Length: 473
Ligand SMILES: Cc1cc2nc3c(=O)[nH]c(=O)nc-3n(C[C@H](O)[C@H](O)[C@H](O)COP(=O)(O)OP(=O)(O)OC[C@H]3O[C@@H](n4cnc5c(N)ncnc54)[C@H](O)[C@@H]3O)c2cc1C
Image 1 (cartoon, protein in one colour):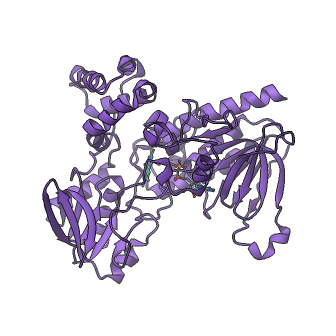
Image 2 (tube, helix red, strand yellow; image 1 turned 135 degrees about the vertical axis):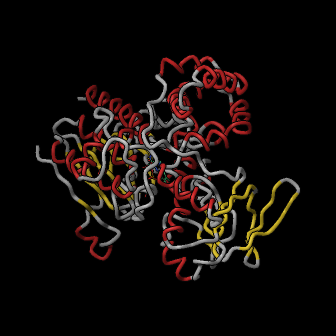
Image 3 (spheres, rainbow, N blue to C red; image 1 turned 60 degrees about the horizontal axis):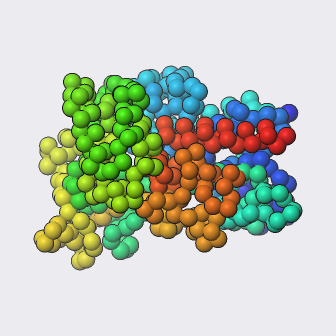
């Protein structure tokens, strides 16, 4: 069967909705979100598809394969994992490396510009669509609700409603909605950038003539590191980065070594309390002290989804209090190129790191608190890089709110993400029909964020969905 790609754009063509199909007859799978997660889910389903399978991918922004991470066009914004760990294909570990090589853009250990990764995802999707037996439809629209279809009318199917007014009946829906909105510690206003990935920082710096003026970056995670590296390219030389810990993530090696094998870390699965987990992890670091520590951290990361479900909420809270900040500093690392820029800026006095909590912005200064001390840091420009909220109710995602309000989903453990099982089923009345991949699964998996984790999840979800289709036919 010929594969079909229709890019329907009801947002751009509202004036001509007569030509726009308001109702789509039953499809097999709707994927909500066309960021990296949605595209990887589509790739996985397309590879497994049989003739006549109908797969719809719905993305509300204009671009597919970008989402928050890969929409940047700034060349110093790089992926933070070497190319050999960024394949979108679980069955083809060197897929991204091959793409880079064929385009003359790099090889195994390249930390590619993130926009290149978006191009790779789009290219991979186009190739997969062309070679698949499925009918594939790509929508530019927002999914505003997913409900159980009318009882009796559609034997358990889901009713998917879109912002344009269109609706689709689907056997399965995969939520790949990403991170949700940011928590912002200072009020929005002139001189405050609340979302670094959507702002044109070059224009903002020019508008505020902020080159030699004090700039405060709130946060010291990977986004903050990217923002500082970008500000460097505009010649900004008075930057203060503030966070609780006051430290940037550790750096990747130029040629990273592979993580410990699963067999070397799986004994952690027996640990259920914070104390046991920390003790077991310490022993592991001691046992492998002759290895680069990154190999141990990456090995631990692989076993976390298996350890996490056995840890009670109270013990999870203890872990957050005791090791969350230090874990985050070590587990998601900066590409070596970014680390080099930051080191240079610190060494020449252009970048200062401050440990404290930002809680306001008044009279051109950011207000910082640490224990009993409170002080102000002058800032002509404030750029918030505090990251998205992990709590489902604070994601600011109307579809997630709808699912929670209607009782189709509930918050995950300790209110993080949505409640899912380890195979990605959203727990609730739509179980086995409604699935999730990516950040919304942090409540169940904790580590549910990077491409390796997302592609593994996509593979499992796709295999469960295709198994159900097999049973139905
Ligand atoms: C700055 C940054 C850099 C990163 N770098 C790396 C890296 O180098 N390597 C790595 O492995 N990981 C990296 N990550 C982790 C990253 O989260 C994943 O790689 C990936 O981007 C997650 O994709 P996603 O599709 O789950 O989420 P998102 O990228 O957030 O995409 C979600 C998409 O869903 C759409 N959407 C949401 N709701 C709806 C709706 N109701 N209807 C229609 N569309 C909707 C959104 O518009 C968006 O496009 C990075 C993350 C960030 C933030």
